[in-house]
Image (cartoon, rainbow, N blue to C red; front, side, top):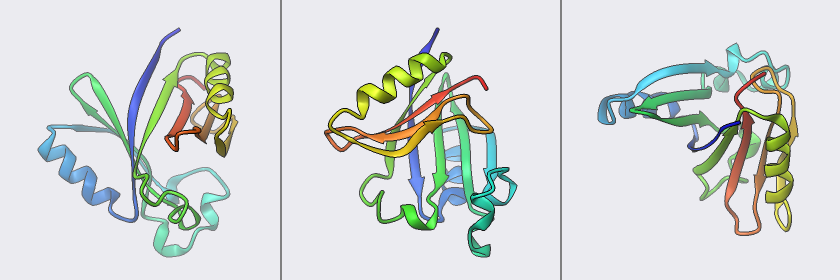
Length: 141
């Protein structure tokens, strides 16, 4: 079982521009990029047309590290104000993901409940009691 922390930057429509910028300035390589239009999540398909080409999720490799970048969906903008950077805890074990999620939510707030998604067997978002937002993600489906 392995675990790692990954910075996750939230944008409000600037993710494509940010990806190009980080690709150049950090000598990063885009290893994954998905727009809301390409997402298989039915809820994402209900977004306004002008949001469909925004970035739902992207992964940059910078040396041996990763940086996640995504655009916020319309309802998230006010929730994430001042929180453009979050921490993504990635683990290969769904039980460990559940353990992290449950521990971090004590005194905090669940933003997205821990559930299976098309890209992870356990994914959720929780803001801890200190106001730090964590994405919990298993690296295996």
